[in-house]
Image (cartoon, rainbow, N blue to C red; front, side, top):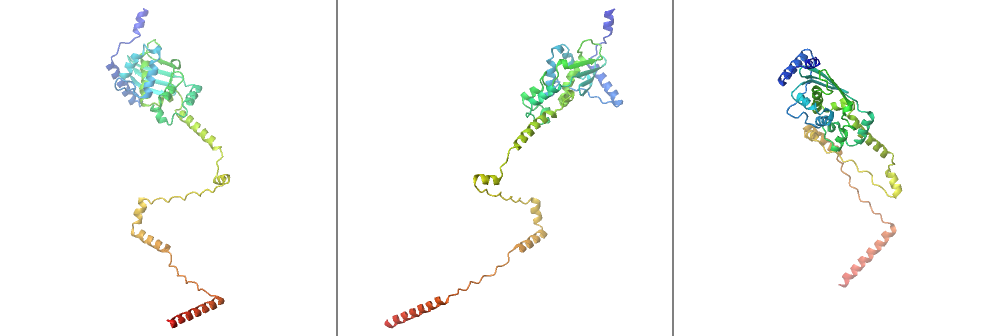
Length: 315
């Protein structure tokens, strides 16, 4: 009697094609009611291809307690059985198509404050932008620190709790496993949801680096700065004044405007106004000879004439 009740609780197996049709019908129903679904769509064999999605799946597969159930969950995630998956702070909800439609809820503990502060401190100064962080383009050492399964951002098995509306008595059914892989696929598209799920701010890593830089700047600003006057007094030298600012070269627009007739007339007028006027020639100052000097010169020339006259008479 117990065995009959046990087996009656299980519904007959549903093929992949039937599950997809069931998923499509449910999505249409939701759309008619105005409900927007976010199905997990995976192209190809790989569930995740970027850093954050791959890191989530790798971390998930390290859980030895889940090893037996994860393969079925992978196939469910690949064939489109996760009709709707929503990630919110600390909780993930999904609707999975199986023998029927099952509601799955996954709760993830918030990252402890002390652990998050330690992560920010260890990564201080190594992260320049949130874009590089979300794209996973940082050094392997930094990303390994952030993604560590016990001291980083990724949750350990003890930090995850889940439930499913299916009749499977196992702690982790295939619908929950499909949801966990669906999270990895969603992080491939929206890696910022990782920080939303763990209830921390990705900007904290950048803010920590900025705080260290501001402290360093404040420390340097306390030192005294020597002025030119102090240097002159200290070394007994004269410092040259600052070089005059170099005039900016005229822009293309200014050159074009200068070619217009109106601009040429204005330029010629300004040049004429600036042209210096002709300077008057200075008259040479008259040399005034003092009386004593003039008498001496008369005597000199008189003597000179007499000598010339005597020379002519002899000749």
